[in-house]
Image 1 (cartoon, rainbow, N blue to C red):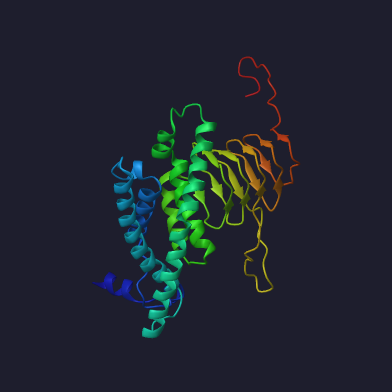
Image 2 (tube, rainbow, N blue to C red):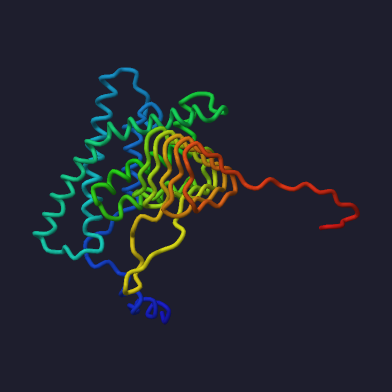
Length: 296
């Protein structure tokens, strides 16, 4: 009972972190349902019962779209209220009206999101000789799971919807090990082979036909602060131009540009601009012979 009393008291630190509204917080479980519905709409042959008849397929997609709109409106509303004081009846009505408008804009973006995701599937299939068919890429590869989350979350981020985009990308991060901030800008035909440990920061700009391998970090080198010592949210991550390949465990840091058609080798720390058509490799290992344990 003593511990219950101690844990029930609001500490000063806890007061700083508490939501400023009494409105319901976003539901992670319902956000998961939203992503499941998105997958069933965009990849109906893989994440829904297969329908050979286009009329029946259209019916099921329509049903899922209606459910998606309902769930999305509710969670966007909770996201808009997150961290803000919108507790009056009037403001609640306004929030749900705004959420409904935003949800419709997201729904209208689904055809373009689908187009982009199929370019990602094509890129992954073209880059991996171990892929026997497109279906295995869509159904099994972690990049498709991560990119479905990211491309949907990015659209919400573009519409300035708070917190929900980050929940969506963190769900993919926890499942695949691929950490893509929803604010990053990624072009079409994007591939991540294997994927574990990939990090793509908020202000990254990535062109088309870019391929990353596992462990790649597109991060910031340092942070700038204002006069009060607060971190400034300014562009601080790399720009990767078209047709760039970055091999495993390379770290590309800061607001630098990797020129088009360049190849960045593995295990490299890059903090300077790279000209187009470049190849950046680590220093070659020096081979030496030792006997009887000498030199170890």
